[in-house]
Length: 473
Ligand code: NBP
Image 1 (cartoon, rainbow, N blue to C red):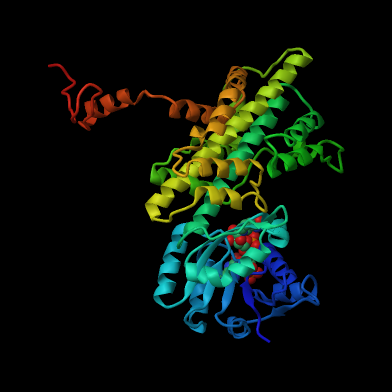
Image 2: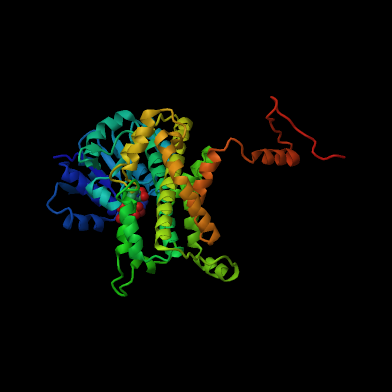
């Protein structure tokens, strides 16, 4: 009996996806480069299930019904090209390779173009939700050939997360690299969310001197309101976790050096490439880089002096500031999402993808790391106005930003006065102020460019392009 689908790469994501597919009634063949991994999987987690072990690509391909559907769940980059090269001669026209890893979207465009020339299909499918999502239902962002999508649609929809237990977080996104692009942007937004939440926590700790359990209560309350989201929820859990050895809050014992796997960097590079304005997302990446130079910061802290964070106020004043921090967090989050969706909009035009921005928001409501009720608001905004240029211009978001901004400004000012780095809160506020400014300082920049490089400028009082000989003889 042939299997419905095959999967290559039995690390955490691959194993869990296989178990998920099997639990939905599919027969799955698996292959992993290192055979011991396959043996272990079959001996333990896959024992007694409709999961077929194969120990060569030939065996894998031979075990599948046609057209063959093979998911790659391996390390992104060169390994994907290596496996495609080995797999290609074994496949027949119409077979489908589904790249479920975090491949760079330009690689996906290249690979799908090359494979389609040879009669094979290549789908670039963004999968989010980590190991738990892979097992219980991830958010899935499929891109590539529409005809091939129709053939794998049932399986992908079946294994995806469901909103209210029924609406799947999986729908076709667009051609070639669109699925991986949307996943990349999801990760960029995730970087922004995580940094903003961390800044809110840090302000309560450093400025207000609150303990982890006091901050936990605030996050729990936030999770009951408009900030409700997976990341706020796990932050509350993190704050309540005590170290088994010392009994202290574990988060206070964790070194302040954040790692990254590069998808935030890709999003930032893309924003620069397309001329999209995404400072809060880019700042979140820089904040990780700054955190990474711990030793240098320790040295600098002994040389560069600034104010010591200090707040002396009544309990009710502290409550007011906590309220302001919540407002600042929500407003900054809106700015960060506005940037992510503008990037998607620009990518859609640049690469001719015809992305449906509101529908993309719906894909992220369950299963992925940025899942939140808030994403419904984004869908509603695009339903109200499909040509919306920026989320901040939608009536709901505009009202929230207006209501939040006094508190937001107080929080950023307090942080600056107290020497607390709130890079993403303040860059989001500068983005808001910049975007709503009819006039910016760029007239001076243009004058300088014309002065030293004869780059010319336009005028506000008449049409045309001008150059001035700035130096009076
Ligand atoms: P890894 O990204 O750690 O990749 C490990 C897998 O790749 C192993 O099965 C390994 O086989 C295989 N592999 C490598 Br490395 N080089 C290979 C080659 N040349 N030929 C064949 N196989 C090769 O696994 P992961 O964390 O499960 O992630 C899989 C994909 O999903 C990645 O693209 C990742 O970015 C993406 N992703 C991960 C997460 C997450 O939370 N971890 C979430 C969403 C997406 P071996 O056993 O022989 O070394």
